[in-house]
Amino acid sequence: MLRIGIIGIKGGWSSERLADTVEEITGERILIEPGQICLDLPSGRVMSNGTDLNSLDALIIKKIGSRYSPDLIDRLEIFRYLAEKGLPIFSDPLKIMRVLDRLSCTITLQSNNIPMPPLTITENIDSALRAVEQYGEAVFKPLYTSKARGMFLLRPDPEAREIISQYKKENKIMYIQKKIDLGGRDLGVVFLGGEYMTTYARQKQNDAWNTTTASGGKYEPVDPDPSLIELAGKAQEPFGLDFTCVDVVETSDGPMVFEVSAFGGFRGILESRDIDAARLYVDYVCRRLKK
Image 1: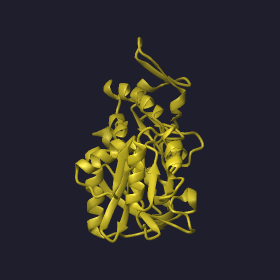
Image 2: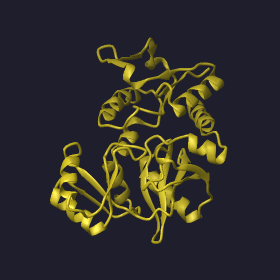
Image 3: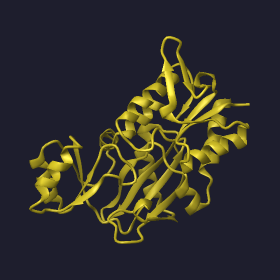
């Protein structure tokens, strides 16, 4: 019987569901918190609460931390060590690194001619001010974040310079995106092994500027135009992730991509489409391991 470990957060909805699913299929539940891992380089052993990760048949990385930060890159390096020693890891740690940093993800998307909302990257406060004036409304996004945490909307204002100056103290490189009309929703286009799975919407329910569930957004089913699915497929392709969700918004200028998710979520797929993505993912991993 295969021994598959889940890298995730205890108590996290998707992490627990994935661990439960692995237990149903393999008979063993191995949920590993990334902060509890110890790499001993002389022996090459990677341990977590008595579990020798080297002895497993595979790892699935669901979450590398409860909040996005540059520290997660360092955590991924330990899993890169395991992957380079031959342990199958889904998704490959190096591939996750390329999307974990918002700027790295954006540069890859732009290099592949994926349409995105207008964007300014700068460390200069004057340049940031000009971007806000040019865009009329701008969203400041930390490079490591999810669910709109740490993001804020800024319009031209006498206090804008001071607001930007304070923001720059914690965010040296500023990622400033023009606020665009979401039409009340954005879409999550889901891929497993590079193949299209489904699409769901995050529908705004209040006057929040974003659609995240943390701001009251609700998951709803949607069947997008094939051209939108094709765009999302092109967006995720350069990253080669085993499971991912592409955030897409429909605009008057056509669909645009916000980002490609490092991990993707299961809850929106289940609630909106009644699709058990965790089971499909584990089935996919088992097929890959048996080849």
